[in-house]
Image 1 (cartoon, rainbow, N blue to C red):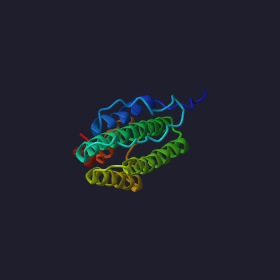
Image 2: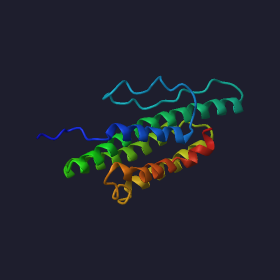
Image 3: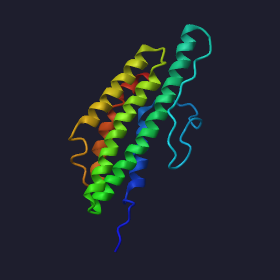
Image 4: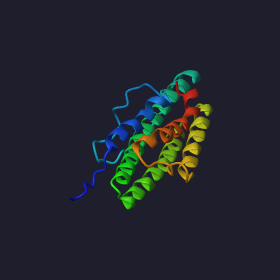
Length: 180
């Protein structure tokens, strides 16, 4: 019998990964524009347009919302990819394909590092220093998680994913204080 190249459980874990977005609490604006072009299409990096000229406080508030919305979009895209990689990893482990599971594990860790870079990039235009600091802390947390050899070491089945998602979700705690 030929084994399927598609691992079991990937879709469910992709959805679980996307739930990270809801937990970050960053932004509430319409995020359809600038989102992924469709399944399999590369996601464009979120961008922030300059806030309109107004009072300094109004401009900072508008800019904060835009930056937080861009961070939220980056997290949604990264969480979906990370979740899919975790699903792929556990599916391949269940199917006995250690090589493919290792590839998926490396891809998941690369996605965390990539997400850290995206969070930093979209936070650059933030006028509010607290937003920039929270984004930098979050990005650093993601980098440290990706570099931790124990992060995915205990993941053998889909059941083992919950603590990993909890840890990755907690990396965004600094943003929850400023992106409300």
